[in-house]
Length: 294
Length: 294
Image 1 (tube, each protein chain N blue to C red):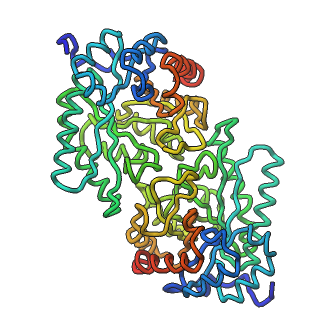
Image 2 (cartoon, chains in turn yellow, brown; image 1 turned 90 degrees about the horizontal axis):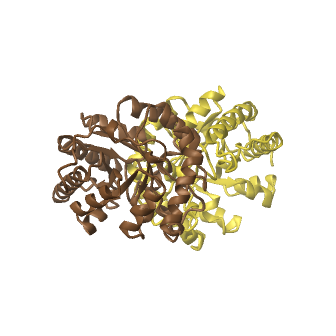
Image 3 (tube, chains in turn brown, green; image 1 turned 135 degrees about the horizontal axis):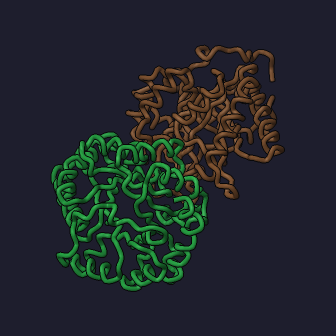
């Protein structure tokens, strides 16, 4: 990592507009080699990428940062920290330590925020309420560490379909409760359309997130049916499913959000598509369904 | 139908206690002939059944009522009305008319409540907000018709996994908003653990339902993983999945609910099990996980 990258870069200096505001999440291209992914991104005039810790592990932190810089791209988010629901003391300590490393990586990549997928329910005790308490406590513990490094923690409410095995945080409001309980301005929420589009109180929750300065990331992909055999892979290109992107994007805009708009699609068909073509489709759908309302 | 069945039977006269309070939903035994289903129910000392309109269509309304009476069983609910999200005027009129027939059938069966699955989103317009408005309007239109016949309408929030294709009502609070907007005491909610167990505001919502006299039905079955190829069929026997039945049942009890507790399981393995055995398992799990807390 070069010393030319200030961690204190203000968010306003980091913003893109138009297609530069679009960010491609690495997992949308998980089967694509890193350089091909970066090339496909810049070829569309897209300004940022969302990276995963797997990329850090494979390429190395400094080399990864250098390659993203060389491509002229920003890093919108790092995926992912979290998994904070374990009840055994040793497991909790290990999870906190792993999250501190993830925060360090986020800072080193110059990404403003680490995405937290908080973890699921232990089928042995089925105690979802207890699991949530442990998340609240762990997030509050991690918040100062993140703040000191100029990084925010974006709690990701996952679709309730994943409440048992992946995330006991299922709504924006619930994520905001946890963020507020942390007492830190470094904790907020990522709004991913796939996970929250069904929420009857969506607009109110988005307004609350923005009003409390906790709306840290907006991510878009569609809800496709039928669900894939692995439900996690039912995400689709914007426009292929049931989500009303113009309406939700207007809620985000009206709330005052001006940050990156990230596209994270887990889908076997997308992974089987050449990266350049997939990036082209995403840029096109973004221009049609999202950008005019953002 | 005999004239000995008063539609004005007060709810308190209809209540069972212990295993008599348990109700088996017909769809848990959809592959079982009607009489075998009724026999399996009474053999376990179970007091009620939840019926479906398909039973009415197959057996005839009077004959169905007679056979349930002859078995000494109550009818806890009729499934199902709803599907009120269509936007074309002719479709909306047809849906209202069909729901009036379902209300008539509910009354004729002596069941206190008709369960409403409200319908999904039209992929052509993707307008979930508009679909919800049409539900609110239609429910308010149907409420007086139901009230005149001594029947309540139980809106069923379905798991958000089904928001696109089956029900744009996803939470208890949202169902209560619609119930209150109807201006009628005949509209309320069914709390089905499978659909709402993940809700971070579950206890508050149950208390609200009871405090407004709109908690009409409590249904139990488990959230199994992995999801079945047809996600609708991922419901399991209590105890097989991730749901904390003692805790949720105590919320229901503490809110003052004393009505039937219905078991509705859609599951290929359950359907492949002999009805007598399946009813035995359900009664056993109910006695272990639900009844002590109810």
